[in-house]
Structures are given as structure tokens and as C-alpha cells.
Figure (spheres, helix red, strand yellow):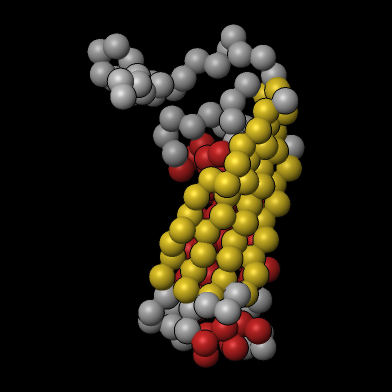
Length: 149
């Protein structure tokens, strides 16, 4: 496989990809990730007894905020005025799942925004529960799909 990296020029320097000649399209991307939590931690979240607040709702807000700031975090990422970002966090039998979908009409994809939303939402859960759970594990973060029309 000899694919050229789009963020590297012919001299090996980092560059932001020029998307000016691409057509505007409606683009969506969905990402997902999990955090493993001890049973007692899940009980505390369910009962809204984590001292920092409503863990899942705050994680959702954090994910939305992060998606809007993706280009501030990832150096060569284009700043995008997102049309929509949804983040859902839900308890499972082993922890919590986070899913994010970003939507934008423009010249470049929104997968980095969806992935960033998931990661920050999961980190927020971790931060809010770290006093109660020393064995949390974040994982399985992946892009589920992306479309353009």
C-alpha cells in the first residue's frame, strides 16, 4: 500500500489540506466509544449520587462543546461551523456508551468532530467518577460511518 498522506507535502512538511476546489456537500459522521465502570460506580451514576453532578448529561454537553472546538485541538483540522452535533451517553451492563453524530454542509468531512466529541465525553465521565472508581477503562473508540451527499 503506497498511499500518500494528505497532510504531508512533497517535501515532508505538515500542511493543511486545500479543500477550496471541493464542492459543498452535506456531510455526517458518527462515532462511538465506551468506558468500563465498576458496578458500584454505575449505581452511583444511576442514583445521581456522583458529587460533581449528572455524569451522563454533563458528558453529553462536554462532547458537544468539544466537537465545536476540534480544530483548536487538532492542528491541521479545518475549523467547521457545524450544523448539528448530537451526543448521547448511556449506562450499560458494564459501563457507559457514548455515541456522537456531527453534521455539516461544506467541503470537508466531520469525522474528527464526531470522534473528538466521543473522546471528550468519555474523558468527562472518567473525570467525574475518578474519586469513586480507580479501574475505569476507556476504549473501543471508532468511526461508525460517514456520509456525504
